[in-house]
Every structure is written in structure tokens, then in C-alpha cells.
Amino acid sequence: MKQESDNIYLFTGSEEKTNKLINSLRVGVLLQGPQTEILFINKAAQQMLGLTEDELSGRTSFHPEWNVIYEDGSPFPGLSHPVPTAIRTKKPVSNVIMGVYRPVTRDRVWLLVNAEPLLDEKGEIKEVICSFSDITERKETEEKLTWLYQSLEIRAFELATSNAELKRFAYVATHDLQEPLRLVSSFMQLLKKKYEKQLDEQANGYIKYAVEGANHMKKLLLDLLEFSKVSSNKEEFTKTDMNLVLKEACRELTNELKDSEAELIIPTLPMIRANTLLMVQLFENLIGNALKFLGSRKPVIQISCKEEGDKYLFSIKDNGIGIDPEYTDKIFVLFQRLHQDNQTYKGTGVGLAICKKIIELHQGSIWVVAEPGKGSTFYFTIPME
Image 1 (tube, one colour):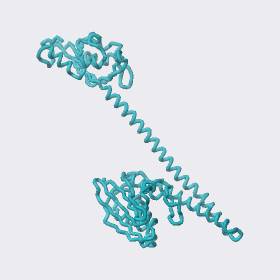
Image 2 (cartoon, rainbow, N blue to C red):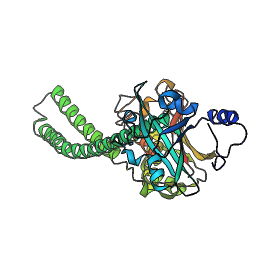
Image 3 (cartoon, rainbow, N blue to C red):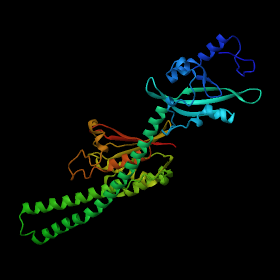
Image 4 (cartoon, rainbow, N blue to C red):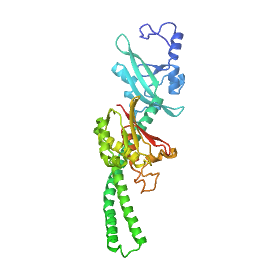
């Protein structure tokens, strides 16, 4: 490429060295004349455009084979191309994204293009240096990320809608089903009261089972309603004194603690950011669980808390009947019960599922370490921030 003295190129030395330097660049470089005709092409430009030096030499920015488009797919007007714009305005044009068709490989390359006009002594356009880099891979990544983001937004909306519908269903179902259950229980009891002397032992047993079944179903519905009410509103999170939380939970369990003569070992607990009512419910469920499965020994329940990295690790240890390690994950599943004997161990299998939901809402984890006959220790974490 011939270099004239009034050219503003910053290269020095022989033409061979200059060409070698330009061809070593990873950036595509075109030197174009006043009519946008291509005068020089470096190797990077040839590779990006998929054409040889001979095929590119003399072409203009208006060549129809380029089939240039905007990012949205609409046609890119010839006069809006960076080089014609630089010639028309005599000003540099920077960071224009163009989709250029490659006739040989029959695909499209996305280029980030700059155009720098070179003026003569009279201020007229002499040449234009057009430089560009291949951003095809970046564009593909951006399109994938955009698609993923839109998919996530759609999925999040669907989940929010589904969650709202499920909450509404649980609320309506629990309320609407309680009335027929109440009627079943009431009329069965009236039936027993009026015809008890006329019925045999087996018939009275059937009435008893029906009443107990209706009452158990009512308890299931109330627990399901309680599970659905665990809120996800972060605005309800405030600074919470866990000592007061524990005190309130024990007040709710006053009768159970008194009847079992349980011994509670309680340390000083920290202040955390949490939903206070849910924390009371959490402790009430976990301590109540320890009192329910106490076995034959006097219950001893030990509560502890320590800092572990950026979170607090709480534990509630009991000396009850314990759990087979095989079932330690199962107990946190809604309506999963290890003991089907409702007389000895009453419950619906909702309490620990509620605990899990509360902890997940607080961005923590909950698990249990237990051994049959040697008690259980429930652990849960709450982030410090």
C-alpha cells in the first residue's frame, strides 16, 4: 500500500513492514476511497468477510451482496453505513453494529464497525479507514441470554400465578370442606345419642370411626390452611429477639410442657432479621414435636445457637424415641407420617413441612440427625444478614 507524506497513518518504516503490521491485527481493516471503493484489505478483514483480496478490491459499501441488516433484522440503508456517513459528515463514526451477509459460506457475520475519515489540505475526503471486529459469538450469547431471561420471566410469572391459585384453592377448599365435615360429625353424634341403645357394639364402633375420621380430616384441612398461610412477604421481616420468640413459643405450649414435666435447657439467643410470627411457629412446632415423641423417659430438650460463618446455626435436641436415619428426609414432606398410630402419636404430617417452608423463606436450611431410641437433633440455619 502506497503511503503519501500528507497521510496521517502512524506507521513508519517500509511498506512491507507496514503491511505486515496491519495484517497481524485481529481487527479487520479496510482503506476505502471517496466513493467507498475498497483500496486495501488486511487478512483479518478477508477472514471475517469470507472473501479474498481480489474479490473485495474495488467493492463499495453499497454492494447489494452485503445485504446488511440492523440487530432487529430490518434492512440497513446504504447511506447509513459507517463509511458513507463518515464521508458525508467528515466526522468519525463509532461502534455501529451491522449484520453482513457472507456469500461464500452463506451465513451472516455481526460486526462492530468504526469509520475514520482522512481529509486532504482542502478539507476534502481523501480516504476512510474502516475498522471492525467480529462480534458474532457475542451476539449469539446475548440472544441466548435474552431468550433465557425472557423464558425465566415467563416462568416466574407462571409460577407466581400458579402459587396464587394454589393458595386460593387451599383457602377455599379448607373453608368449604369444613362445613360438610362438621355436618358429618354432628349427625353421626346425634345418631349415636338417639339410637345408641338400639345399635350393637359393631354399629357404635362404626359411628366412632366416622366421627374420628371427620375430626382428623378437619385437622388436616386446618393444617393445610396453616401451611398455605406461610407468607413470602419480605416486608414482614424485622429485627427479631429470638429469646422473646422462644418465650412466646413456650407460652403456647404451657400445658404440654407442664403435663410432660419437660426440662428445657435454654441459652441466650441472638437478634436476627426474620418474620417474628413465623419464628414463633417454627419453635412451637419443633419443641412440640419433641414433646410428642418423648418415649418413656422424662423429656429433656436442649436448645443452642452458635455463629457459623455468615449464618446462625440453631439446634433443638431431645431424648425421645428418635428417627431411623433412612427417614430423616421424608419427615419434612407434606402429609408424610412415620407413625400411623393416631392414638399414640397424633398429627397430620404438616408441622415439619411448615418448618421447612419457614426456613426456606428465610434463605436457610433445616435437617435432622437422629438415631432410634436415642433422640433427635433438629438443626436449622438463618443468615446473619
